[in-house]
Picture 1 (cartoon, one colour):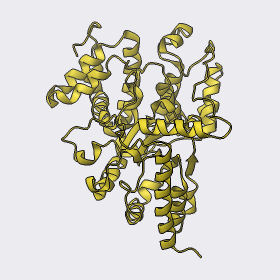
Picture 2 (cartoon, rainbow, N blue to C red):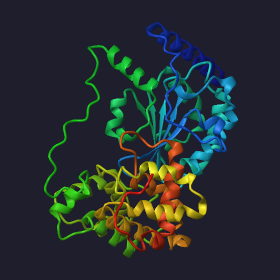
Picture 3 (spheres, one colour):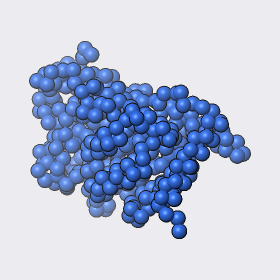
Picture 4 (cartoon, rainbow, N blue to C red):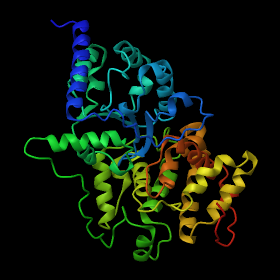
Length: 423
């Protein structure tokens, strides 16, 4: 029988061999890891966060938070305190583990020079107790190698069967498109280049390039993936989009006292079925699903699939600047930003944020304070036009959203004539 020490030694050998094989193809170690993180030096874990090892990348297609760990962003071990890395991982996860979430691990870039020890990995696994594991829905390991599989065998005695079933190996980035909102993923350039090499080296020629199939023209009754204007033009009698109106109405009636509302996912097939009904213009009866989280996920999905966010692309930079505004002036600044929205966006936003304010007023029961709701909805209300939201960008976004919810009456109480807000 192979002992743990034998497996550890074999893992070391495999990692060294993989490095040697990669150097034979091309040596790209001089290329700096790609990171969109521009962490504030005041961040409590700036020494770790500045490397961009961990990123939070919005939600997946079914409302679950996406958290990314990129090995290629790990600096040499002598430049990083791995205990601090572990603390930073817990610091980041603590903000999201009460809701369903997904982990994406990009393995490429792990080398003998930057890898944490196997002892550290065992300690890290033990540190992450049930609180961190129960709401993890899937762990995607991208570009797995023999080293990963051997390490998995080392850990098998420590890992429950239930947790083990959450592991999914992904050999090519294209495979992620069937599971996640690929456009939201923050993928380091090193990982993209590595994927291209793997596809080019595949026997029989590379697989088809990663391209989104041409979009079909939307149905006249389409509700998901089309603009607010498109819906309004075809539902002139409805100022509020039907999906938004029906989910909010149902949740007001039956969901306000549900603990963890908006933090749980629902069965993927159920969500697909409900979306199909809406897109075909057929009636949806949420009572038949006997799960209040179904309309909650549908609401988030509707917002996330808008071609332009509800609060528009234009205000994104203004939201990012909210931390530069004095605390006592932030509510006024948020009011100015919101009042600059186009009329229809303002009306729909007021309807939604009024509901979220109502949810927050029941936070003693449902545990969804303005801060918790902001963590869920911030990334679904506004995002940049041409890039993903980095981890450092989440703080101002969440603060902005929290103000909209907590100070709803002040922010939306009166509407000045629409006009430009000076950035």
